[in-house]
Image 1 (cartoon, helix red, strand yellow):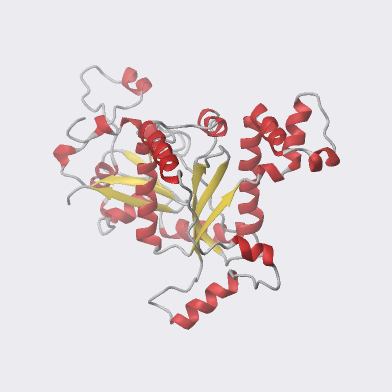
Image 2 (cartoon, rainbow, N blue to C red):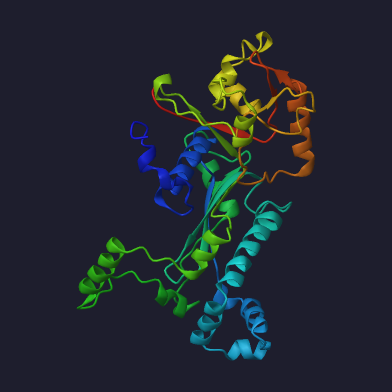
Length: 357
């Protein structure tokens, strides 16, 4: 464990921990390495104080009916109290709106920022406790800096986004909010020092963040699945025991007690796959099954199955075309030399490796 830093990374399965987010970072780097530079960075914040239906829903759960006029006249402090009464509803409402926003708007047929190809979403939490989502988006056929001309890139950006400073004659109030001078107070440094000390010595978790972690609700979503391939020397590999039910069925003298790794399965590939590189093998033939006489797609019995963190946002027709193309390139089942049966993985998969080659 110490040799492989496992003892220091044991919190990676605790969602929201630094080790967990470091794992997500490696997944993101794998996507960037194979997809290229993302097109857009988009942050979506929860305007829960301006969503009257959320507060009305929480109040209804407590037996009180709030009208639209009640919401218009409600003070900011009262809105906060209602949100604090049921952070579960507030958090679920944000997640529901986020999912619908991506499904119906960003990934919809209107293509407001171009045709969405891939994405990764991270849900974070503001100082006031409400969630917000940081999203990285890859757009199909997007223009790229240093590949296309500056004029083409500028025209592409201007097509989908805009920014401007209002003229003082048109909107003096909004213009005044664009502060261009330094703001300071006599005790500002002392206040910042106190806040900084609190951040260095404490980790504050809001009620809604606790809801996301405990329910659980997704802190991360992505359009791609990432498969880790250990490219370190073999003496540094770490093996995982087979499931308990399989170990109980095995003979006491059987030494084959570990799950097979992608490298083990690649080394046992049949002769017809001799020219297939390891990256293509891992990305397309990730699922393995034992030959028990049943349909090979019924149950995976060799290794712990991978968990999909998100779903592809491509339209149904395009996804069917991609599946048909994959089925034409790879057989439905391939028997390895060690007796295992592999089935193609039709969800887009990326390879992540770590270690010295």
